[in-house]
Amino acid sequence: MTVVKSRPFREKQGKILLEGRRLIADALKAGAVPKVFFFSRLEYIKELPIEKLKGVSLIKVKFEDIKDWSDLVTPQGIMGIFAKPDHVKMTYPETQLRHTLPILLICDNLRDPGNLGTILRSAAGVGCSKVILTKGCVDAWEPKVLRAGMGAHFQVPIINNVDWEAVPNYLPADTRVYVADNCGLYTQAQAQAQMSNKASDCGWVCDRRPLQFHKYEEEEENLESAANKGWLPELEVQSYDSDWTEAPAAVVIGGESSGVSLESLQLAESTGGGRLLIPIVPGADGLSSAMAASVLLFEGKRQLRARAGRLSGDGSRH
Ligand SMILES: C[S@@+](CC[C@H](N)C(=O)[O-])C[C@H]1O[C@@H](n2cnc3c(N)ncnc32)[C@H](O)[C@@H]1O
Image (cartoon, rainbow, N blue to C red; front, side):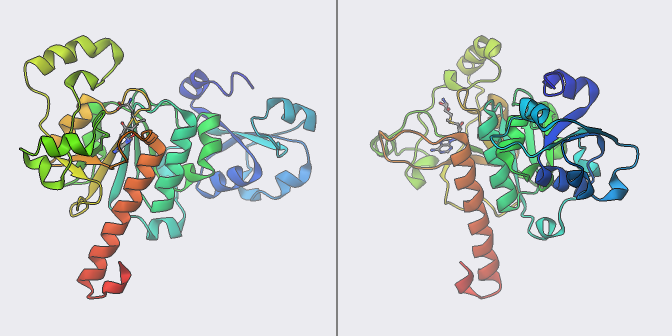
C-alpha cells in the first residue's frame, strides 16, 4: 500500500488508488478503469455496476487491513486500484457539462495537497471547463488531494504535469490569461501615491519586485539578470471585479510560497490578459491560493451571468 500510494507508482505504473464507496462509484461512472478492489464486505462490491467488474481482481481482506492502509478517519471498507484516468477518455456528469463556463484554471507550482483538492472542488462547483496543473504542482492523484477534492476529480477535466511551453496547446482559441497576483506587499496608500500609469485607473498598483517572481528555485539568478535587462512583462493590474470575462478566460493561481511564475506573466502578456488583484485590508493576512481561486472563479461566474442577463434584457439575473 505504501508503494501504491507513492508518486513513482502512479507515474511508472500509471495507476492510482481510490478509497471509499462514493469516490469509487463516481470514478466508475466517469469511465475510470478499475484493476483491483480490496474490500472487507461483499455488499460493497455488490453495490458496484457488475458490467464494470469484468477482469477486475476482487480481493477480500480483513477490515483491520483496510484500517491500516486507509487515510480516512472513518475507513469505508473498500479501496480500488485504477488505471490513471485520462481526461480525454472520461465521461463527465451531464449536469456538470451543461453548466460549464468559458473559464479555465491554471495552477502554477501549487505544492499543498489540501489546497489543490479545495481548488478542484471550487473549480467543479463553479463549472470550470478544465484545470491545468503545471510541472512542479503536487500530483492531482495523490491520496490527500483526492480526499480534499471530494469527487471533483471526476467532475472537471484535470490535465496534470504540464510544461509551461505546452500550456497554450490546452487553451481554447482567443483565451486571455489572467494571473491572480497579490502583487507582493501593497497598500491602498501606495497605490494612490503611484497613480501614474494605467493600473492606477482602478486604484491598484503592483509593488512586486522582479526578484519575487519564481520559476524554479535554481533559476532565480537567471531571473534576476532577466529582470535587470528589462524584459519582464508589463502587465496591467486590474481589480478582480473589473470585467475580465469578455473573452474565454484562464486564471492562473500561484503556489503557496513561490507565488506566480515568470512564464505565467509572459503568457498573460502574449494573450492580452492581465493581473487580477483581490484587494484586502492593508495589514491583514493574505489569502491562500485556494481562497483566491474561489473568489476569482465565482467572480468570473458572476460576470458571465450579469452579461447574459444584460443581453437577454433581464437585469434581475445579476
Ligand atoms: C499565498 S499566495 C502566494 C504568496 C507568495 N509568498 C507571494 O508572495 O506571492 C498564493 C497565490 O494566491 C493568489 N492570491 C493570494 N492573494 C491574492 C490577492 N489578494 N489577489 C490576487 N491573487 C491572490 C496568487 O495567485 C498567489 O500567488
